[in-house]
Length: 239
Image 1: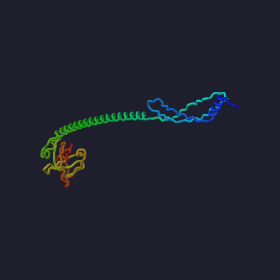
Image 2 (image 1 turned 180 degrees about the horizontal axis):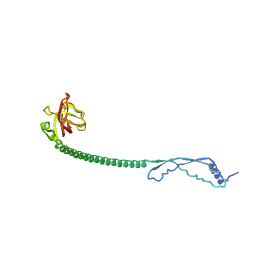
Image 3 (image 1 turned 120 degrees about the horizontal axis):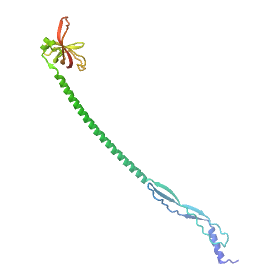
Image 4 (image 1 turned 180 degrees about the vertical axis):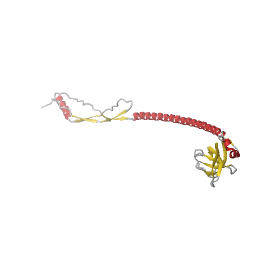
């Protein structure tokens, strides 16, 4: 049986279309819009689609062309470099601000310390000056007196503020006995720890006594004999 040329052409087309084929589609690269804080980089992949065209219903059907759906595959890897730089810049700025603030605090603290030191020194100077003036005024109230005046006429000087010097030769319960400087004439000093400045006193210690004349001390010596010596109540003992 003879076939017409049209039927022969259709048979060849069907044979070609019935063979399974693999269509490879190269995906395009999609680059998302840039962001303020991150850059999105797309890494494309190649996706393969298996496609088998359907067989024609009859030899009279025209050649069918199938267009598969295009599939794009990519992997997104955000690049945080811009964000990290922004964060680092923010931290650096904050650190610089903190450093500047600390320097200001240090400068203020140093200035306050200098002012406080200056004030303290001024107060100390005024206190010292006042103390010296008070001390000078204190000592001016006491007058030097001839020891012979006290030995012979102590009662005539009761209440007088005097300054006398000598050497300790006997420690008493409430005071001590002193030889007038350069003599063996003695007088009695009534004094406690406050008048002595909290220091211990020993025999042969030189002393300067600032005090008030009380008159005479009357008592007995170690041999039982009567003694009468000028007595001074000390206000301050320098030794």
